[in-house]
Image 1 (cartoon, rainbow, N blue to C red):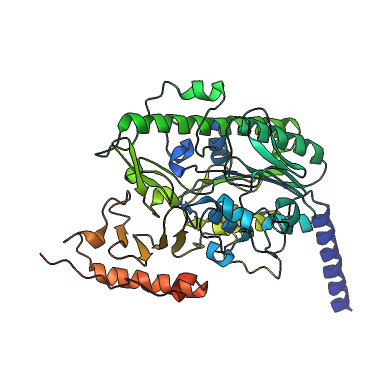
Image 2 (image 1 turned 90 degrees about the vertical axis):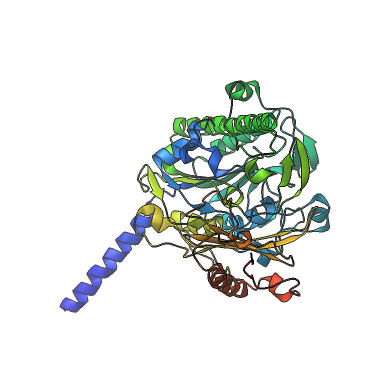
Length: 481
């Protein structure tokens, strides 16, 4: 009898718990992604010149990932992993998708599951406002792959002023500044959804080239700044300072519009009901390492643009990532454990309590326990990266990064591999492979260990570069005096 009563009590408790959980209002989610914004460009990451109070607010009132990395340092490939939780080579998107490739059908493969689709299937209304750049065919356009609403552009680039956006009846030029237009559409759409749970992906084109023109309010805020820039022999310092000032003005435009969005959420009573995530698709260089732009950056010296320098320097692969999760994340939290944008899929679902789909093989980690403060275990023992450049150049890069070492393997190239002691040389200025007596460590043993880790990981994801002929793949030998 007592056993029966005990089981009855447990059953009632379970029913009460499930009913309570079902009655709890679901959190909304706004996931903001900027284009080409480096970690070093935000105040909350130590920049004292860039004006980013609203981005910094997310770190102050939520969590900041101090060591966040993209899986690859170009846009389409990075965004593919961000949306799917898979490595970009598994999706056959290894570089940015050029216009001729997009028209030919390059994009997310048919049947690909993205995290907004999972949330859509679990009761959230979804929208993408801004840049897509993951396909334009019927099976991978936003409206077919997981979004109830789309306003923006399918390709990779656009003009800052009077942009051209894609609509069901064709592309149309819209009057105004792109960042302002996207924010106004985001606010309009949220206003229609505020009575039901929503997920908004807001993808700004800024601060991508061309940096301007920007509205006067953004230009005026930075016009008198004498920015700090890399002091490297051969750089045209006035040119680099001009680029940096214009870059900060474009970032200011994003931050200003984020402030408009946050103010609207507060006035509508949605600020404490909405998780806000902010990140960028990859890092950026303006004179850093003598290059301009990202993983496919080009040499700049003496005011002249040179050839491409494919790279996976930290300036290109580190990204900002902040999450404000009301009532859960302790304000001012700093997560030191290394994370990757590959983790986005599982983390978004983890924060909202949505189940992982059985048919989706996830290679990223759910970071929600880190954000809750329930775990301190590192989600990744090492960080891996990949980049196959084929637009305006050719390169096959793979990266492995530990707490101390970073090794970049250049497949099909000789004398191009890189090894950096991150602890002694955080700026990655000394490639130890090419330096005589560079370290007391046995460089060959360090490389052998890192290459072993790299190969195991590559095999685990069926990295296509392993199945190709290994041209010019020799062991490292020590220089002789």
